[in-house]
Length: 303
Image (cartoon, rainbow, N blue to C red; front, side, top):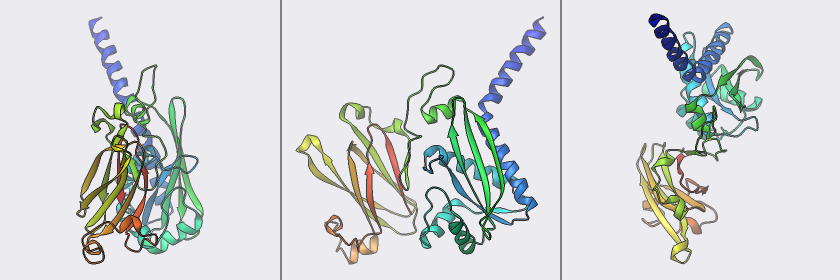
């Protein structure tokens, strides 16, 4: 009897451990199926474009699926190579190709020419009641025609549900905003690191990551309501590969302006006052607006 009870408990532990891995193993299975179909078509070099919502929105969960799918695909790619996503992003920017949302036939063909990839993988996902439905398809970069596809229902576990900000099995989960649509290179990360007074005072954090090979200077233009709603200028100097942050920014829109170090020294004379006054943006490497959200930390990647 004791033996049977021990076996039963061991089985329950095993099943619990397996269920916790269902999402990852399901995604791995989709990648394995896609890799076999690519191998049958004798494709030698492929690129993973990305996974998006059905509306073509880029989200943190979509990025999560894309990153893990790329790893699994690489592991199964005995007969083909998978181009690194960071390298792909650099090439897309150099050739002024939009990497947001769905990829169309014309872009697929251009991608094939500039990267020499034979196929492009893209997909969508839908969050249902207890599963995330993931669909992947492969496009031939010469014809832009779809030649392979796969899909699966990946069970929600506590980790993924927490990431999405939803509850499973009647539990409670704090919505961390991970599944809200993201703009451009913006991601939500480590909201727990924001100062504990963030909700009371309505502020969040914003970080900038420099993925370029150049030293950059960033100016953030925002406001402080408790100081007469006056404009605040926050400046950051970023070496290649470096990340720096602006802390306790009010829950409003922040305007950012980016210039290369050599422009800052020669054209601007070591000052940034011209940046937000220049309607032609002739000095700028990048510029835009980011919505600061209460108790969230965001990172904007400069590419």
